[in-house]
Image 1 (cartoon, rainbow, N blue to C red):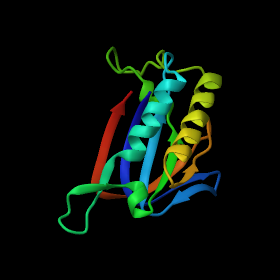
Image 2: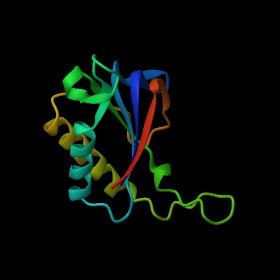
Image 3: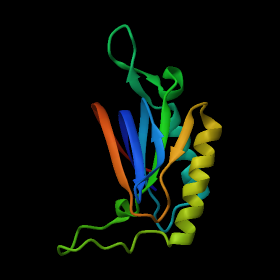
Image 4: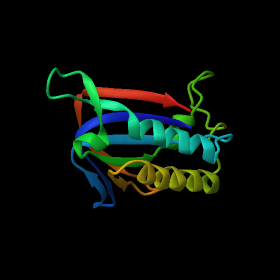
Length: 147
């Protein structure tokens, strides 16, 4: 399971002209599910992200606060391209990506665990949809997690 997380001032997901998920200050999570990923991986990743200290403290600007400590929000967007292998040739291989049915179950499980672990509001994109994602990256602060 892979995640690209970005600290944002705001972010939204639009599908066919409709805003399906939006947040203010918080964390945008692009989530990729791979073949061998399990519920244990999803739960561990949700816990890790919810507790990451990504936000500056008022005193010195260091990253000392987690999203729940600043009343932040999460926006989770499925992104199977994170499972791509770019090692050979010029065309990405998606052999490592989980089958859509399995990926959607783990995506939903991850969201449920993220909601359960933290006290933050969680918005989402739409699984398997073509999405327009707009964000204002705060910092910029971006991390890659590989569970």
